[in-house]
Image (cartoon, rainbow, N blue to C red; front, side, top):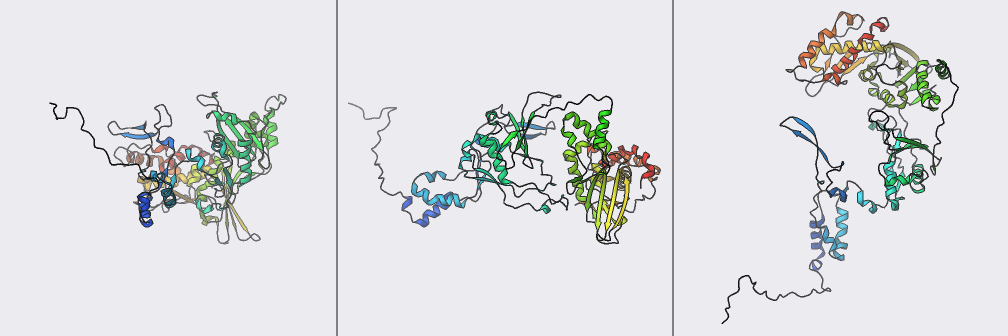
Length: 569
C-alpha cells in the first residue's frame, strides 16, 4: 500500500492560479481616477523642491587608474604632518534622482498629462552639455556684456580653439552656434579698479565672428581640419581683437632650452568681412651688407630717435611719437631696435585724475602697462635699462587748490617701481581754473627720493607699531611735491586706525642718516618673528605686500640714495 506521506525534497503541488490575460481595451486604474486626484499624484511624483542636475553620461563611468584626468583631492595627514594631493579612482557623485521618471513611459495618456508638469514646473541645471549636445537647437554667444579694455579680464586675443574643435567633431551642428550682440555692455562702475576716464571697449562684430568661424570650420580655408583626428596636435587657435589676424599653434616635441618645448606657430589673416582666411606669407630675412663695428646700432638709434618725448597716455591707451615698425623686420632687428629705442628717447607715462585725494585706482593703469607687450622694451630684471618717467596730472576747478593740498596714496606705485632706477623723475602737474585762465603748477622728484621718503615713513610705522609689520592694508600719503604727510594703517575688525602723521619730520633729508632705522627695527622684527612671537617661523621677507616686505625692498635699494642726496626735492 503506497504511503501518502510527501517525499523529502519533492515540492507540494501548486494550485492553478486565477489570472487571466489583460483586456487591452479596458482603461488602467490610474486613468479612471478623477483629473484632480491624478494631478495631485503627478505633483507628488514629479515635482521637486531642489533643482534637477543634468550631467553627462561619462561622469558616471569609473576612470582607469592611468587616466591623468581622474579626480585629484587634497589630504592632510595629521600623524606625520604631511600635506599633499592624492588621486582617487572613484566616479563622480551623481545627484539624487529618486523620482519616478519612468512613469512617463508607461502609456501615452500619462505622458501627455504629466510631461508638461515635469518639464515645466521643475528647475533643471546643466553642468556640462556633453552628450546632450544634439538636444540643443541653437546656441547664441552674446558678446555684448564684455569687459572694458582696462579690466584685468581683458585679453589681447580671442581663443576660439575649443569652439572650432567642437564644431569639427559635431559636423551636423555647424550652423547651431552663432555670435550675437545684445548691446548690453557692462557698466564700468562694476570694475572698481578701472580708471574713471576709460571709455574704450572691445570691438563687437558678431557677423564677422560668424564668418570667420564658418571659414575655419565649414570651408576649412587653412586646411587644418585634418588635424582634428588627433587632439594634441593643435594647441591654440586665437584671433586678435581687431579680428583681422590670428594664429595657430601646433604642439612640437622639439626642445629648445632645458625642458621647455618650442611649439610651432603660424599666423593667418582674414578678409574684411571674415568670409575667407589665408596663411600669412613667411617673413623673409632681410639681407643687409655686413656693417662692421657699432655702425648698425648707431644707424638704428638715428632712425628711432625722437626730438620730443614719447608720451604714453595710460588712461586712454594712446601714445604720441611711438613707432616700432623696425621691430617687425626680424628677430635680430627687433632686439637691436628695442635697445636703441629705450636708450635714445625720453619716455613719459602719463596718468590723469580729477580728484584732489586719490590713489589713481591703485595705479591699475600702470600695472596694465607692465603686463602689456610694450613693457618688453623695459624688461623686469636685476639690471634693467633706464625706465620711463612718470607724470601724475591733476585737474581742479577750484583756484585755491595747490600742490601742497594734494594727497596721493603711493603704496602701489612703490611696489611697481621698486626696481626702477633712482634717477628717474616723478612729475606732479596741477591745472586749476578754466581752459582760458588755467593756472599750471609743476614739481618733480627723483624716484630715489620718493623711495627714501617712503622708507622713512614706513620705518616710523615699524618703530611705533611693530606688531603691524605683516599688515597688508598700508597707506602712505604724499602731497604734490613728493613729501610724505602721513603713513596710515587702516582700522580692522580687531584694531583701531594707526597714523604716524605727528611722528614724521621730513624737512631735513639727513634724518635718515642721523637715525639708523635698521639698527632700531631689526631687533624688533627678530623679537616678534621669533618662536615666542605671534607669527612663529614666518617667512615675511618674501611678502612684498606687507609693511615689512615693502620696507625690506626699499632697504635693499638704499645704497643708491647717496648718489641723489642733493636732488631729493
